[in-house]
Length: 92
Image (cartoon, one colour):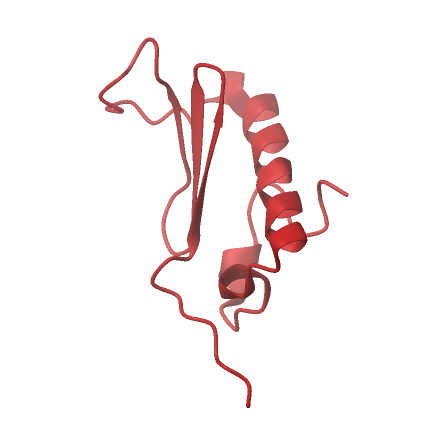
């Protein structure tokens, strides 16, 4: 018997130093500088100055998703969850 993935937790969070990146499966991704914005009020994910950081952190998220076998994202039928600035084949 195969258990279908659940989509209630289709998100991943990654912290690197002062930065927190949140991949939201069904919503906008988030990026915060926790030193400058500890209350997470200003989402920097769409800030062009943060593009390289978002790409790097999203690549790391996809690598983790594959490594851990996170089926909620990796096997979803909702293709839009796999279409971000960095796709599922990133992060080798």
